Image (tube, rainbow, N blue to C red; front, side, top):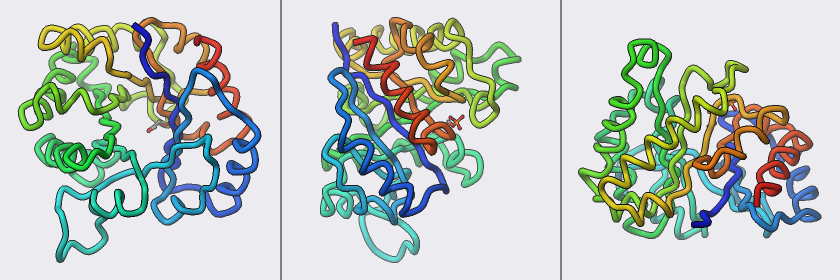
Length: 248
Ligand code: 13P
Protein backbone atom coordinates (compact mmCIF):
# COMPACT_ATOMS: atom_id res chain seq x y z
CA UNK A 1 0.00 0.00 0.00
CA UNK A 2 1.29 3.40 -0.82
CA UNK A 3 1.33 5.82 2.06
CA UNK A 4 1.63 9.59 1.98
CA UNK A 5 5.32 10.59 2.14
CA UNK A 6 6.01 13.66 4.20
CA UNK A 7 9.05 15.79 4.88
CA UNK A 8 8.32 18.21 7.70
CA UNK A 9 10.63 20.91 9.01
CA UNK A 10 10.31 21.80 12.69
CA UNK A 11 11.94 25.19 13.12
CA UNK A 12 11.50 25.13 16.92
CA UNK A 13 12.42 28.56 18.37
CA UNK A 14 14.42 29.52 15.29
CA UNK A 15 14.01 31.38 12.03
CA UNK A 16 12.87 34.86 11.07
CA UNK A 17 10.98 36.68 8.36
CA UNK A 18 13.99 36.56 6.03
CA UNK A 19 14.11 32.76 6.27
CA UNK A 20 10.36 32.55 5.56
CA UNK A 21 10.90 34.67 2.45
CA UNK A 22 13.75 32.41 1.31
CA UNK A 23 11.54 29.35 1.67
CA UNK A 24 8.65 31.04 -0.15
CA UNK A 25 10.96 31.92 -3.00
CA UNK A 26 12.60 28.50 -3.29
CA UNK A 27 9.53 26.34 -2.86
CA UNK A 28 7.42 28.44 -5.20
CA UNK A 29 9.78 27.19 -7.90
CA UNK A 30 9.89 23.57 -6.77
CA UNK A 31 7.34 20.78 -6.67
CA UNK A 32 7.71 17.25 -5.43
CA UNK A 33 5.55 14.66 -7.07
CA UNK A 34 5.70 12.07 -4.32
CA UNK A 35 6.26 14.09 -1.17
CA UNK A 36 4.17 16.48 0.84
CA UNK A 37 6.44 19.18 2.31
CA UNK A 38 5.47 20.83 5.58
CA UNK A 39 7.02 23.56 7.73
CA UNK A 40 6.28 24.12 11.40
CA UNK A 41 7.66 27.61 12.10
CA UNK A 42 7.09 29.60 15.29
CA UNK A 43 3.37 30.46 15.23
CA UNK A 44 3.99 34.17 14.65
CA UNK A 45 5.23 33.40 11.13
CA UNK A 46 2.63 30.97 9.83
CA UNK A 47 0.75 33.53 7.77
CA UNK A 48 3.91 34.94 6.23
CA UNK A 49 4.19 31.80 4.10
CA UNK A 50 2.62 32.25 0.69
CA UNK A 51 3.72 29.15 -1.14
CA UNK A 52 1.09 26.70 -2.27
CA UNK A 53 3.62 23.87 -2.38
CA UNK A 54 4.17 24.05 1.38
CA UNK A 55 1.79 22.99 4.12
CA UNK A 56 2.27 25.16 7.18
CA UNK A 57 1.50 24.04 10.71
CA UNK A 58 2.13 25.07 14.29
CA UNK A 59 4.40 23.41 16.84
CA UNK A 60 1.89 23.10 19.67
CA UNK A 61 -1.77 23.65 20.45
CA UNK A 62 -3.85 23.98 23.59
CA UNK A 63 -5.99 21.24 25.07
CA UNK A 64 -8.39 24.06 26.06
CA UNK A 65 -11.06 25.51 23.80
CA UNK A 66 -11.01 29.16 24.89
CA UNK A 67 -10.77 31.37 27.96
CA UNK A 68 -8.15 32.52 30.45
CA UNK A 69 -5.14 30.54 29.20
CA UNK A 70 -2.49 33.15 28.48
CA UNK A 71 -0.08 32.24 25.74
CA UNK A 72 -2.11 29.41 24.25
CA UNK A 73 -3.56 28.78 20.76
CA UNK A 74 -6.78 26.82 20.26
CA UNK A 75 -7.66 24.38 17.52
CA UNK A 76 -10.59 26.61 16.50
CA UNK A 77 -8.13 29.47 15.96
CA UNK A 78 -6.05 27.22 13.72
CA UNK A 79 -9.13 26.38 11.70
CA UNK A 80 -10.12 30.02 11.60
CA UNK A 81 -6.75 30.91 10.08
CA UNK A 82 -6.67 27.96 7.66
CA UNK A 83 -3.97 26.00 9.50
CA UNK A 84 -4.43 22.27 9.01
CA UNK A 85 -1.58 20.65 10.96
CA UNK A 86 -0.01 20.82 14.40
CA UNK A 87 2.83 19.02 16.11
CA UNK A 88 1.70 17.46 19.39
CA UNK A 89 3.83 15.90 22.09
CA UNK A 90 7.29 16.83 20.84
CA UNK A 91 9.83 15.53 23.35
CA UNK A 92 10.88 19.12 24.09
CA UNK A 93 7.27 19.85 25.13
CA UNK A 94 7.19 16.66 27.18
CA UNK A 95 10.53 17.21 28.89
CA UNK A 96 10.91 20.97 29.23
CA UNK A 97 7.24 21.89 29.67
CA UNK A 98 6.24 18.73 31.53
CA UNK A 99 3.56 17.66 29.07
CA UNK A 100 2.18 14.29 30.14
CA UNK A 101 0.73 11.49 28.03
CA UNK A 102 -2.72 12.51 29.33
CA UNK A 103 -2.31 16.14 28.29
CA UNK A 104 -1.03 15.08 24.88
CA UNK A 105 -3.99 12.76 24.37
CA UNK A 106 -6.33 15.66 25.25
CA UNK A 107 -4.60 17.85 22.64
CA UNK A 108 -4.94 15.14 20.00
CA UNK A 109 -8.65 14.84 20.83
CA UNK A 110 -9.13 18.60 20.45
CA UNK A 111 -7.34 18.65 17.11
CA UNK A 112 -9.06 15.74 15.43
CA UNK A 113 -12.48 16.95 16.59
CA UNK A 114 -12.11 19.89 14.21
CA UNK A 115 -10.18 18.08 11.47
CA UNK A 116 -6.75 19.43 12.32
CA UNK A 117 -4.12 16.77 11.66
CA UNK A 118 -1.82 16.14 14.63
CA UNK A 119 1.74 15.07 13.99
CA UNK A 120 2.02 13.02 17.16
CA UNK A 121 5.63 12.79 18.35
CA UNK A 122 6.83 9.81 20.36
CA UNK A 123 10.24 8.42 21.22
CA UNK A 124 12.41 7.09 23.98
CA UNK A 125 15.35 8.50 25.93
CA UNK A 126 18.78 6.90 25.90
CA UNK A 127 18.15 5.66 29.42
CA UNK A 128 15.00 3.84 28.31
CA UNK A 129 16.83 2.39 25.31
CA UNK A 130 19.76 1.21 27.40
CA UNK A 131 17.35 -0.41 29.85
CA UNK A 132 15.86 -2.40 26.96
CA UNK A 133 12.43 -0.82 27.34
CA UNK A 134 11.98 0.86 23.96
CA UNK A 135 8.94 -1.10 22.76
CA UNK A 136 7.18 -0.96 26.10
CA UNK A 137 7.73 2.80 26.29
CA UNK A 138 6.56 3.48 22.73
CA UNK A 139 3.53 1.28 23.24
CA UNK A 140 2.53 3.19 26.37
CA UNK A 141 2.82 6.51 24.53
CA UNK A 142 0.55 5.16 21.78
CA UNK A 143 -1.87 3.53 24.22
CA UNK A 144 -2.42 6.76 26.15
CA UNK A 145 -3.67 8.41 22.94
CA UNK A 146 -5.68 5.40 21.75
CA UNK A 147 -7.43 5.23 25.15
CA UNK A 148 -8.85 8.71 24.54
CA UNK A 149 -9.45 8.88 20.78
CA UNK A 150 -9.54 5.21 19.80
CA UNK A 151 -7.71 3.68 16.90
CA UNK A 152 -9.98 5.60 14.52
CA UNK A 153 -8.78 8.81 16.13
CA UNK A 154 -5.16 7.76 15.88
CA UNK A 155 -5.79 7.02 12.20
CA UNK A 156 -6.25 10.76 11.70
CA UNK A 157 -2.72 11.50 12.96
CA UNK A 158 0.69 11.34 11.43
CA UNK A 159 3.15 9.65 13.79
CA UNK A 160 6.69 10.92 14.21
CA UNK A 161 9.14 8.57 15.89
CA UNK A 162 11.86 10.75 17.36
CA UNK A 163 14.30 9.00 19.68
CA UNK A 164 15.34 11.69 22.15
CA UNK A 165 18.98 10.62 22.04
CA UNK A 166 19.06 11.44 18.32
CA UNK A 167 17.48 14.90 18.55
CA UNK A 168 19.92 17.75 18.02
CA UNK A 169 22.85 15.48 18.83
CA UNK A 170 24.15 14.78 15.33
CA UNK A 171 23.68 11.09 16.12
CA UNK A 172 21.10 9.82 13.62
CA UNK A 173 19.53 6.48 14.48
CA UNK A 174 20.89 3.93 12.05
CA UNK A 175 18.43 3.01 9.29
CA UNK A 176 18.10 -0.43 10.91
CA UNK A 177 17.46 1.00 14.38
CA UNK A 178 14.83 3.37 13.03
CA UNK A 179 13.17 0.75 10.80
CA UNK A 180 13.00 -1.68 13.73
CA UNK A 181 10.95 0.76 15.83
CA UNK A 182 8.81 1.89 12.88
CA UNK A 183 8.04 -1.77 12.19
CA UNK A 184 7.16 -2.27 15.84
CA UNK A 185 4.78 0.71 15.76
CA UNK A 186 3.08 -0.58 12.62
CA UNK A 187 2.87 -4.14 13.94
CA UNK A 188 1.48 -3.00 17.26
CA UNK A 189 -1.16 -0.78 15.63
CA UNK A 190 -1.82 -3.62 13.18
CA UNK A 191 -2.69 -5.87 16.08
CA UNK A 192 -5.55 -3.43 16.77
CA UNK A 193 -6.49 -2.47 13.21
CA UNK A 194 -4.55 -3.66 10.20
CA UNK A 195 -5.99 -1.16 7.75
CA UNK A 196 -5.14 1.80 9.98
CA UNK A 197 -1.61 0.48 10.56
CA UNK A 198 -0.95 0.10 6.84
CA UNK A 199 -2.23 3.55 5.98
CA UNK A 200 -0.55 5.60 8.74
CA UNK A 201 2.44 7.69 7.77
CA UNK A 202 5.25 7.21 10.30
CA UNK A 203 8.03 9.79 10.07
CA UNK A 204 11.50 9.49 11.54
CA UNK A 205 13.04 12.45 13.36
CA UNK A 206 16.41 12.92 15.03
CA UNK A 207 19.43 14.44 13.26
CA UNK A 208 18.09 13.76 9.77
CA UNK A 209 20.46 15.49 7.36
CA UNK A 210 21.40 15.49 3.68
CA UNK A 211 23.78 12.58 4.24
CA UNK A 212 21.50 10.27 6.23
CA UNK A 213 18.18 10.99 4.49
CA UNK A 214 18.36 8.55 1.56
CA UNK A 215 19.27 5.49 3.59
CA UNK A 216 16.51 6.24 6.10
CA UNK A 217 13.80 6.79 3.49
CA UNK A 218 14.61 3.58 1.68
CA UNK A 219 13.37 1.63 4.72
CA UNK A 220 9.95 0.09 4.15
CA UNK A 221 8.24 1.53 7.21
CA UNK A 222 9.78 5.01 7.18
CA UNK A 223 7.40 7.34 5.36
CA UNK A 224 9.45 10.51 5.58
CA UNK A 225 11.09 12.71 8.17
CA UNK A 226 10.55 15.35 10.83
CA UNK A 227 13.64 17.51 10.48
CA UNK A 228 14.93 20.01 13.03
CA UNK A 229 18.31 21.70 12.50
CA UNK A 230 18.62 20.78 8.81
CA UNK A 231 15.21 22.36 8.06
CA UNK A 232 16.71 25.79 8.77
CA UNK A 233 19.14 25.38 5.87
CA UNK A 234 17.18 25.76 2.66
CA UNK A 235 19.60 23.82 0.42
CA UNK A 236 19.99 20.93 2.84
CA UNK A 237 16.26 20.75 3.43
CA UNK A 238 15.70 20.63 -0.33
CA UNK A 239 18.18 17.77 -0.64
CA UNK A 240 16.25 15.88 2.05
CA UNK A 241 12.98 16.49 0.18
CA UNK A 242 14.56 15.19 -3.03
CA UNK A 243 15.81 12.08 -1.23
CA UNK A 244 12.27 11.27 -0.06
CA UNK A 245 10.79 12.11 -3.44
CA UNK A 246 13.14 9.69 -5.20
CA UNK A 247 11.75 6.84 -3.17
CA UNK A 248 8.43 7.55 -4.84
P1 13P B 1 17.12 17.62 14.79
O1 13P B 1 16.84 17.27 13.34
O2 13P B 1 17.75 18.96 14.96
O3 13P B 1 17.82 16.52 15.49
O4 13P B 1 15.68 17.77 15.50
C1 13P B 1 14.76 16.76 15.33
C2 13P B 1 13.46 17.22 15.88
O5 13P B 1 13.31 17.39 17.07
C3 13P B 1 12.38 17.49 14.92
O6 13P B 1 11.16 17.67 15.58
